[in-house]
Length: 84
Length: 84
Image 1 (cartoon, chains in turn yellow, blue):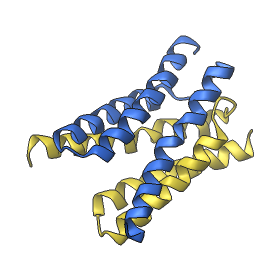
Image 2: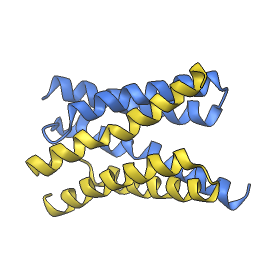
Image 3: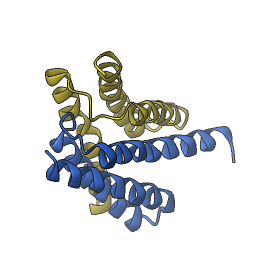
Image 4: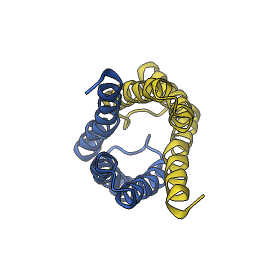
């Protein structure tokens, strides 16, 4: 694996994993007042389209990263709708 | 442009654009209590690595999408640090 591939892999891990602390914080505090409903609506839809794109192009890293991110995004979105 | 390419393009536009309403909301309300500092730290770093990955692989869509997202992420991160 060359340096550029490692760079892309690290980028994917970081942007995917970043939503975990937000999901944990949101679940624990139920404080969603500063979170944008519009952001998470667009983001969850976009992540779903990335997931479908990954499936259609048989790109496992895109499928894996976006499946995980979609779960976090939906959790945050549900809390935002429930505790707005 | 085939259907799968349009799907990928729509996914990129949505996930990139989704951070705009969050940035606007954060700037207007200065309410960052529900936002995870850890999330935006990891996310901004990940987006920076995606940007570098796009530059090294001469992938203009990755560079464009992540340059825009990085600006929004840094704005939200600065507000989170300033108004925590």
